[in-house]
Picture 1 (cartoon, rainbow, N blue to C red):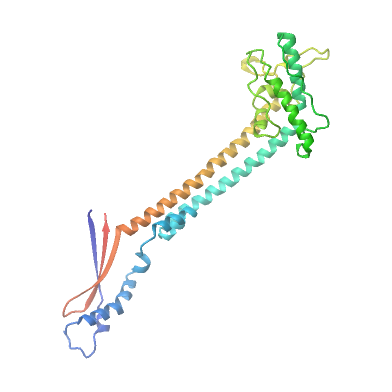
Picture 2 (picture 1 turned 60 degrees about the vertical axis):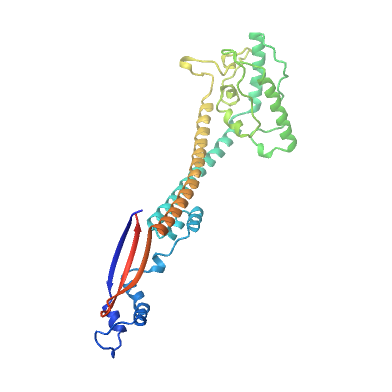
Length: 328
């Protein structure tokens, strides 16, 4: 390994004159005792005049401590190493990430509360089950398809717009009702594709419940503005099939509320996903800051070593010699 040796000669004429006894003959040699006294009395003062404090500037840094400080709070280990620009950058990044994460998550949670409340008011499980029961009749009449599951029976006295007010008995009745709905969904199909329903109605209030009612067209009849699927004479209209494909691949039976709810749901979920991704930046920032602090401390301890000695002429005043060894 190559070494760069920098030797600075700091002349101390005033130190010499201060330490020489007035009675000493001019040109007399300095004894080792006198030199040591001069060193103890004057070297620290002269070094401070040169802006160098060995105890403060060149004290070895604890690598584990530097790592741990920045792992807990980015910038703390950098401050311990006296790399102030890095300390400000790490702490500033932490504050910026926290601010953006907090605002994003708050907006996402607010949007989530909004679309859930909207779903409680706009999507009716009773209406959906009524359509599903009629859909079974439609498949039987038009295609001779037999469904063995009994019709879904809506529990009486249950207000689907106020789930927070349900009693345990009402909640159990809703669960039984949803099981009836799922039994039918497992046995019906789409006339255009002849494929069975891809999804079944999740439990009320589950995360998938709020997602699916605005994602798959089979759940569109549950929205209040879905077209009526029975005419006044009891016959079925084209709206009996929510999956019916129109011009350009459109779904003409699906109502605007279905699509607007889907957009609101997606926007809120995107915000929450973004907040989740931002939270990972906390870990990255803490880890990088900790590694940087540890590496900086190690380099500081390994790269630079200093020493200060007294150089003197046998018949002249002493001078301070500062040696700085830098490993390149």
